[in-house]
Length: 296
Image (cartoon, rainbow, N blue to C red; front, top):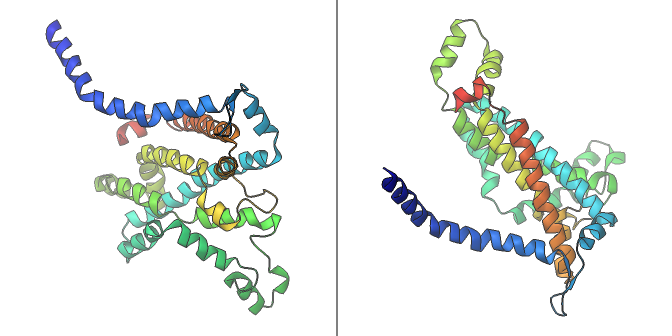
């Protein structure tokens, strides 16, 4: 029996070895390299100098880094809470298969297959101060005083970028919808016989049953929010006055300036924040209860 157990572990190690080797080569080593370079002052040309945690301290003292850090937390809240809530609401509606639900499912998912660059350029045209559709509509309604340079003013630039991103729910909606449609119809039939209306069925059956997938999508949304880059880079490049900048954009600009020490310190900060936030989500919302156990 002992020999069999030993042989079993041996073959497990044999089959896992290629995967573990690739994981170490393409994740563990680069991640370790990031943290090592973050402790150096290095431009990629001259000899590196060890500075310890000074790069991290410099980053947290910089005004633009503070804006970026704050904005990333706002992105996390908007996507992990707002976007997932909206995606779950739409998924629960479509799961009841209303009229043209398949068409609506496709329409909601369509933006996901479109290039982020194309979407950003479309919204840049929509927000344009001169010919953008928003200002044009306000002018025709006689509300000239409400027209804005939506991407050029401090008060509106960040909300404008954030708002257009929150409503692209197709990716998370499909995931939640697929999970929701696995709930047995007998649960709803029994609840209906007991006199439960639609809202009560959704509250006491659907939401508890889809809790595991909500935690998963919140985790994914948090990761997407922390690594957000394309939309802000293409629409405002972090302006005006760094009010829309994010950590990913700061990392890009530091790397372009050959400031590899501070760039890797920014990357290390992103990794640590991501690890902390995902741990909080999994421990806070992932606590096991009877409903989630039955769903799993």
